Length: 590
Image (cartoon, rainbow, N blue to C red; front, top):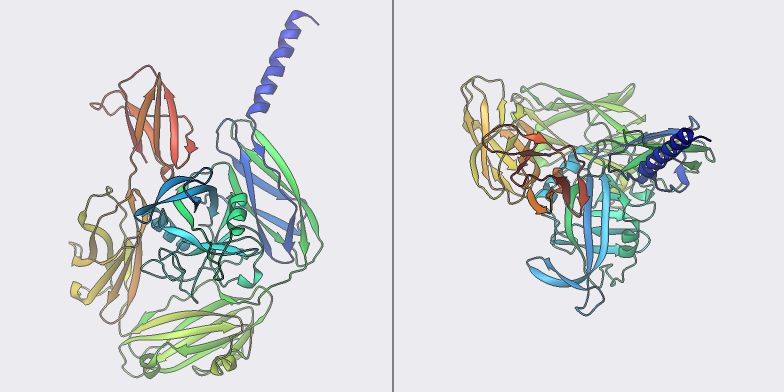
């Protein structure tokens, strides 16, 4: 071999070696067992040596098992410690509930949150997290070995939560067939708050009884360690298991797959997963997925999707809507409507409904259909003006009403309460996003505009309640703007930087309501230190979508965006920029 050939061979070898060193690596994925005809969520973790974000794709070797990659979802990370004597190995002191406690480290848990499946729930958790609701304030107060770990209660005993409650959120893909699944605890239908639990095994009896909104991707050893901690007779850990930090974080190297299997058991396929760094680096990993007999299903029906839209109308009109419900195990569904209260019962002249030839003839009756929809109508009493409430139950048991009457444990069912307003006009509302500063009080902030279609209607005919997203609720002021629309304005102070969902609920004097959801952005700070010729900038992890920019002079607008990929260090995004220029200004720009 001549010298030129030898040099070329060495160059090619070096390029291949460098390329191989920079290629992403997907961690091993265990074989998966999917309940026949159902879904399974599978976490996938990887590394990217060059720091570039990874894009995942996946495919199946058989059309009897399909695979979906969850994308564009946020990640939620929490750090966990456990109370310990001051002389315990590795013990340190950490703030907790206004004091300090000696603890030892347990580790971190990182979840993908399913904004694609449960958007409202994820928004609520984002607001509470940004407000510091969980950090150094909550514990895992209930641990049941082999089942789950429960936490997130500011009262630390399972009785507390935020100042508000909200509805369950269902999606047919979200069932408890896996491990490390994150769900909301509740005290009954539509009583979700801040408390959550993390499963350590399949929990099929919980399907559509608890809002499943996330999947653990990293920290399974931490999950196991918490689950194995010693507890008392009430399942409370003998030593407090404390959440010292919770935050939304960027995670460009992990994802979650949802596998859907055929109705037949013992069907196998190979699932191929590809991670691509967008710069020529790719990795492929494969694992086997097999359907198994669907066991442990709870025959739990649920309303999905929520298609009711006709809530407001004139007096003496009949309001007709279409209800949709699902039973994933093929059950026949039975519908049971009730008046929500005595006043509603008085002001309802009748309820009728049909599904093809099935008839729902009274508030205490049932209509049946196999997987479907119920068209139902509410008729008010003559000239009635006001609201009526309907509790609509759907069950897989034709005897559900009998169980209720006898006070027995109820068969599987779902409940949705609907409020209808007669003698009013519907409210149309739009939200106004805004930006503010942490620890700076603001007043008269525009949050929403609305109209009820009635010219010159007085602002005093309406009220507005504001949920600021950080567990603070207040009343808004209402005025009329120059174009005749009503405006809702409010005053508040955010203590922490973050993104907050702001729920503005407007109600007329008669009873029509509308909710507008704004986003409050409280920008993060950026801190810069210099070591040698390196400028090291860091800012909060939740603000990964903010871009770091530099400028040599504040007197110009020549801000330049740094192209470095930030690195997640603890709960901070970190960028190191090498420059001999010591006179640089930095800012974050979204």
